[in-house]
Amino acid sequence: NAGVTQTPKFQVLKTGQSMTLQCAQDMNHEYMSWYRQDPGMGLRLIHYSVGAGITDQGEVPNGYNVSRSTTEDFPLRLLSAAPSQTSVYFCASRSGTGRSEAFFGQGTRLTVV
Amino acid sequence: AQSVTQLGSHVSVSEGALVLLRCNYSSSVPPYLFWYVQYPNQGLQLLLKYTTGATLVKGINGFEAEFKKSETSFHLTKPSAHMSDAAEYFCAGNTDKLIFGTGTRLQVFP
Image 1 (tube, chains in turn green, cyan):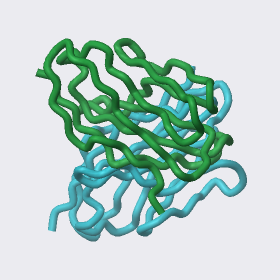
Image 2 (cartoon, chains in turn purple, yellow):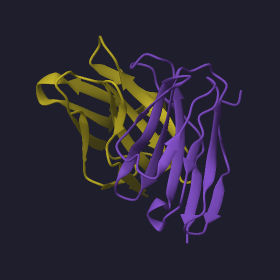
Image 3 (cartoon, chains in turn green, brown):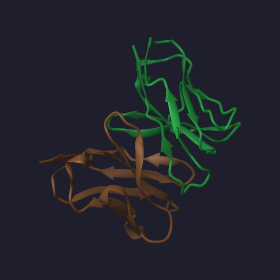
Image 4 (cartoon, chains in turn blue, yellow):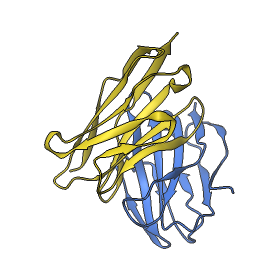
């Protein structure tokens, strides 16, 4: 009964390094998304996907890339990390209808120094 | 454009007091509306949701919310706060994308 699994839980990067945050879900959900959470700003949508092979930008996409080659996986790539990307990142998935609740991973706490 | 506004970033109540967390939405089409709760160092979990039908929605842990289209509001209430309710609460709306408010941190004092 895994739900949404994010790895790693914690990560420290140096400015300019690249990395991939992993997200996998086992509920056969079509819709997956990435959010970042910053104090006082709630959760802001970075990128989302409505199905394999389809991705789109959210509110704050700059500096991040995504791809969706399978239904289960939705990795988030930071190409050249910046201190402004220090945040807590959450992956979420839901079934295709807008009335469905989103299920969240436990989060990845990223620090860029 | 769709948006969700939560009034009050911090709310403090005494144990046993009424909890009221405010949420307003802005959308040309009323979205599906959700309240999520986040306990420290955890992900978000669903408290309740409004899709269609009855405008008073009951959720887990004694929380409920009322959808009021005329006021574009979806406020969250609980008649009697418990210490275990201390957490951060997020209102969210979904038309084509799930958009969150900025959150309200609830403190409960003994």
